[in-house]
Length: 126
Image 1 (cartoon, helix red, strand yellow):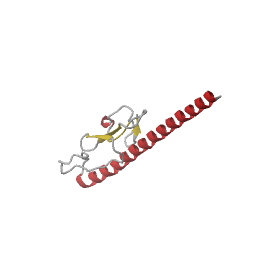
Image 2: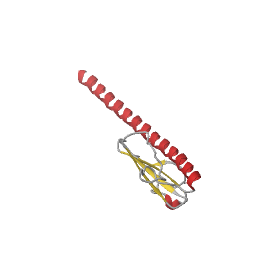
Image 3: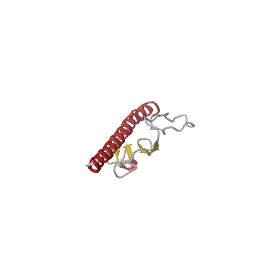
Image 4: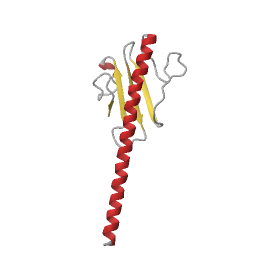
């Protein structure tokens, strides 16, 4: 009886830890999607002022956008594709399960940095 009770307690603890990890990953993915939405707003503002999209976070460039991500441990890669397009990919090394990357693109489909991104302006994770 004691072994059975102990096994049940261990099983419950394992399930609880898995549930907490799953929820933590979901919260971090939601933060990446929110960051991408904020980035769209920042890029739209830059386009209104400069007439083109700009790089993000390149401090040496006078036309770059300074952009702060919600969570530490997230890598941001951006790319401009001419005057009317750009893309961004966020990768979170602290997310334990797939999907670990989220991205977005604006403009022509050629701006998409990944095959999972098929609709311009829609943040998608893969």
